[in-house]
View 1 (cartoon, rainbow, N blue to C red):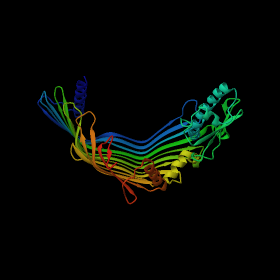
View 2: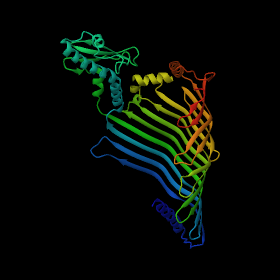
View 3: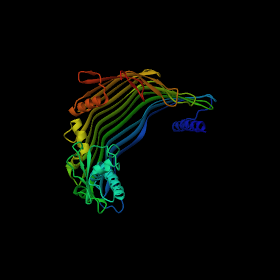
View 4: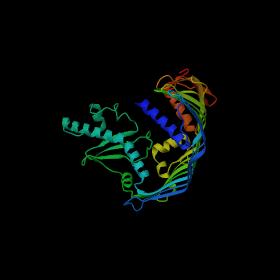
Length: 448
């Protein structure tokens, strides 16, 4: 059934093309045709939408220019009854969009506050779980001894709890009993936030006491958000040759993609609550390019496509994420920023680039670059590929990875890892050098 459907769609495309040219070939005849250019063009598109029963919400879409086109399309059609050959050369589909802007004004919960609550709950999960176990152990101790334990050590010595088992094996919290009033958990100096408030459990009410920090987070009013998603330009260019051979039960396809490029310029997303600029969140992507050249592949007898050669690249420059000030103070986020040496709330990737060159259907080479203010990573190597199965199998050969840690926190993290695991990476100066071989899913590090 899929073969019949595929053949039907292929023939339908051919017949529609011929209909557009107003030419109808007969069997054993040859058809050639040209379309210089065709497409769709729009200018100054604008839409506004206000949801029902939400007087504070407004969504707008604006596009200054949009164009979708094909050009230089040439067709050769030869019908020999049981064998049909179709050749096509064309540029497209080409796409151009300029000044694409979506803006939403929305009154809703403050997602920054929601994130802070989620992180607070996550930080308190371990001590609250431990206190709950202490409560159960105390109840059992009271039942067995008709008195409350004087301290935590009594529960430990009499095997009501084990400090070697979770959650007590986490050394970032300490616990003390003040019965019959309360049980207290305090962060230790190993905690990411050693100065934060203690967690209190009221023995009489059998409930955790909410501290002022939690209470203030749960009582934050709704916020007027302004979201703006903007792209200065999107462009897509293709230039290809296709040859189709139609037989009674099969369809053979040969395609040569001479050039393919997809590019996004000036992409950004911002979110501002109540016009407070300090709490602005921003994601910025000034430049993204995806390119391919001279990519040749075929599909024979309706089997899986085989790529014979081609090259491709992917590049991102100056990708930036700005964290709002109100989230920067969260212990986990602040710790991460400290490790990377970031002080201005802004995480940036200066360059992310990958180049793949398939020399033939069996071998190729790859290059990769990842540059940030806190670390640089580069990869150079060869690979072999098997395309006989449903999923290509890729093997790395003589692949070298260079890691150059820049931030002091990153260098310290690597040294601690080496110490904890009893291994030391090979280095050239301050740069770590690794050599990989083996399957892409699970390569082997030479010498480790």
